[in-house]
Length: 90
Image (cartoon, rainbow, N blue to C red; front, side, top):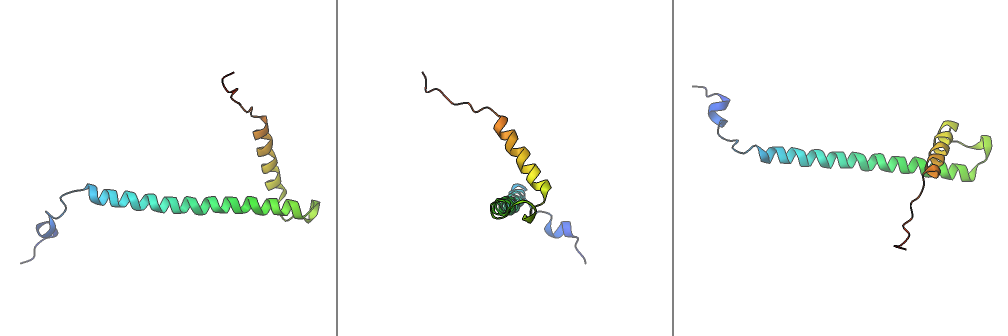
């Protein structure tokens, strides 16, 4: 006599929150690892660009001009923002 899955294991899963929390923690850990790798790659690209800019001039540079243009426009955008300095209560 064959028993179905529900007849055998129908009452085994009484609390849904434990598997849900386990999956949520695992997903969070995986996303944090991905973000760490992504952040490290961004930092590495910027560090290599700065080293390339310091070591080589003009056409000898390895970095594409589009990257230099992007970084220059980003620097100009941050310079345009006003810095608010608190006056210390005076």
